[in-house]
Length: 267
Ligand SMILES: *[C@@H]1O[C@H](CO)[C@@H](O)[C@H](O)[C@H]1NC(C)=O
Ligand SMILES: *[C@@H]1O[C@H](CO)[C@@H](O)[C@H](O)[C@H]1NC(C)=O
Image 1 (cartoon, rainbow, N blue to C red):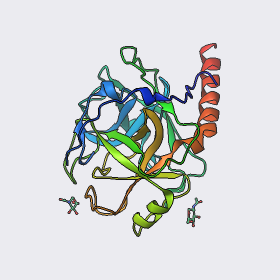
Image 2 (image 1 turned 120 degrees about the vertical axis):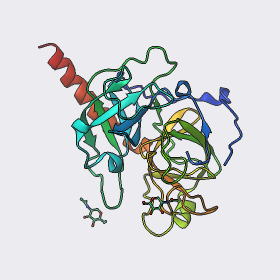
Image 3 (image 1 turned 180 degrees about the horizontal axis):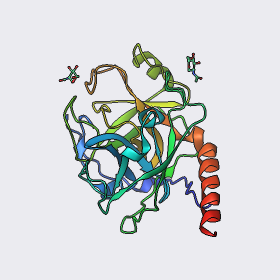
């Protein structure tokens, strides 16, 4: 499937930005969209609802939980901006959503298979950006405990604080068993989750945001138990949907849609 860029990218060569993290996407650093050009902000009116990850110029991944039960005509996507402007619908960096394709086994109660594909109304142009679409992790769903990943998004930096600036932070991957122990009472991680625990915790607006390892998309932010945006050392990891389990589903959905689009445009 050439249209979907499924590249494993051994980017050990790039020691990109060994920034020191200071205490919020809580404990994160301000960053620039040029570093994460594939990030999109999904908005409703003046609210930053969810974050998404572009995998082509027409499709993005996000959290099914975050995108479910929404009224699509009210949603708008903003791309290519470091500082977002929720409330603007028709700017040069806005595009509507034509369809949200939820994983067929997504469970709204347990958050199992918390992944969806967002189809944009129009193809967007990110020509000025280097590597504008995320490379998906096709293998290696399990990373050694201690591996450093990066997450980034427009979520709140503190509970109830509106944030429009893109932030990033490095986070430490933990094993599945460590995650089960640390995750806390309410939601449990599934085998298809990957967890990270660090100073930086995901907050409101970060659901759907990417977890990257060596610039490869390995996870989509799903949930975090515990008090909103509050970090308690050793407790309540960030839980992400591990992309590698969903490659064939993504390929089939997008492949099908590209076929349909081509067919339609020929008529
Ligand atoms: C979601 O999971 C719960 C708990 O396992 C189960 O009771 C429920 O039937 C599931 N819902 C769907 C739609 O599969
Ligand atoms: C955030 O808002 C919620 C709902 O209004 C409230 O329950 C919570 O205490 C607030 N948290 C902080 C840290 O202000």
